[in-house]
Length: 309
Image (cartoon, rainbow, N blue to C red):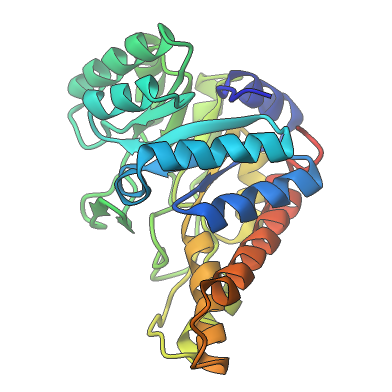
């Protein structure tokens, strides 16, 4: 099966009341863990590549890893640029075989965001590639993203119809209370479902995206802290809130921090229990298995997309 874009995925997800998992990839073990989990539960996938991951692992290497995953799984998989910050970056990814890109103009004034997003959409659609835009800004730190709480802002529902109609985007990332990284909340976690409901009313049938949606699973944080880490107060989005969002207009949920935590916790544990270990297979292998376990849980219990490939 060749790579796919997100059009048919999102149509089925919206109608079925579930979301597609968009998992960030950085190396072979992460790609393997995610795709093996999806194959076992027969789930569609979006594999996301950030600008930082592309610099770290090299575009060609990542695309060949994903090509191998398609051969091994025969699943519908889309390759998506996460948080593209320029037309040039989006164009490079489109020309390099990505089937979906995000252009993040959320830091720009409304009219400039529209102009940049429309430019990307015109180029992408001419090449059969889908585009995700963003309105509203998420707080948090992840890769090249660094937005303070003061700079963050909820999506304004009154802007979404004009933005979508003038840009032609295929999906829209919104800000309703999630944030990037592992330190998401200082108080009680809360998502603004009232904003999501109003956006759904204004854009019926249109696919919505949630960024910063890792749950920061406590067992991983506890393991990291047990073996020398320092992550007090790390908290994420409760999984029941994500499942509710997936049953509404949200068709794509981004997960990155949970993958990092799963891998880091496992590697720390291996080295703590076997300080003289030097075989990468002995610590990256268990990390891959933990990622697989995590992703299966997300696909079945949070996203609801198991069996939907």
